[in-house]
Image 1 (cartoon, rainbow, N blue to C red):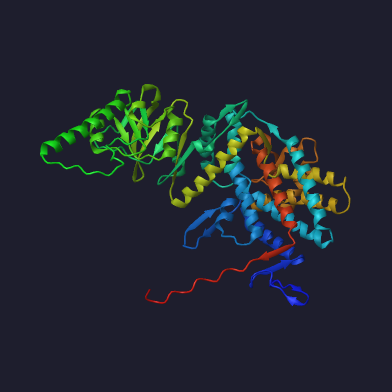
Image 2: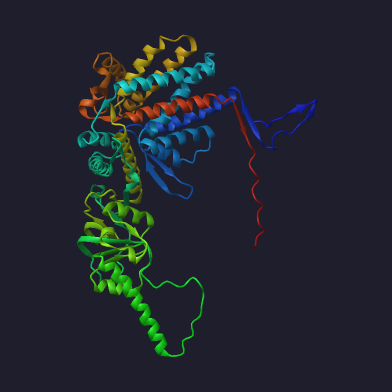
Length: 543
């Protein structure tokens, strides 16, 4: 029960916290925290795996999100409980670091706490449970490294299997195949080798969403897509073999920094001023075009007269381009962004096989593509509705992050609950090395891991007990470590042979994160909730 915190010194009441503050301590605090974690687990349980179900989330203003992505469900659900928020943060961190396993980390945390509650009822101390969970997590991760299989990150076939497995949990099969191909091609092209290791910056992959057409119309472009149009109607709308000037200064006569007035007494003076301005502008434009550039992409404005001059020279120009897009263009085309007309020489120009203005849905966009050795790419996502596009974008970003993690740590493990079943078997054997409460904690950690395979089978419509028994039997054989659940038949199959694989780092990170969050929550035995400030007074009507 929530109560205000009283304190007395020498029989006199002393105010420690503000009036209205509440406190939950001891068993009540532990039970409340575990209950919050169990609710999160129950919320996500039906959404785990390829056969998991979607959630419809309706926001406070009526906006609708349909997804089965764990991190999206938790982020959009407007969760208030502090312990549940800790699980949300763990899921978000999992998504940011490795792009997958966001549902698993929340479910495993929930399962560990649910089983810890049973141990507490059996009078096992929380410190013993956390110690056992820590030992179990370290043993599981050590065993995981032995199960993992090394792959060549430049083997696109293996990468596509990983991408397909990741996407198959949220998207239809035909879309998974296309998105897998696109994601693997994109990550493979921007991957750079430094000191013998691959480095992948997924920020170099631009994702543009456009409503209309099916998801199967999604395309990868080796270059950059600008949500802009050509500045002048008489400019060419398509150019091949382009030399591109990337400028971050305005092609216009800028006003002086000091405010001044000029008195013009005759029309002749005005005419000479206009001629001088036009001459200055023409010199700027000539410096750009004399470099050999036939495409000008400007971060700032382009004067109407400059537009006219450029169109007469058959130059395609785009203005007011975002700085981030300018940097992407530099990486894609090999050009340099320059700050004055005097800097524009042939060696600073970028190159692209094609620059073209196209109409996509209802908008005009400029495509800078067919760049040789492009280190910045663009994915044009298509979808029938805005909500579908949002889901496709989340899936694409996640799989790009997952593939980037494979390049950085080129180890894979079997999917379909194979890893969890094998690790549970190893942990049960390991538990015999301990005694008392620690042994029980390690055993419960094994059971919690195995629950992932149980949930996968439940969501596929299989009998979970039959599926788990058959998986355990398969894992008793020396070569059974790679056997996971075939969700179509409910029977164990060799996941490596069938191509259902996942990055080792995804499994390692979610096991470690779940054990750390569970242990942190178990160490909480006192909750102090500060009083909320009173609402502001209502204004009288008429103001």
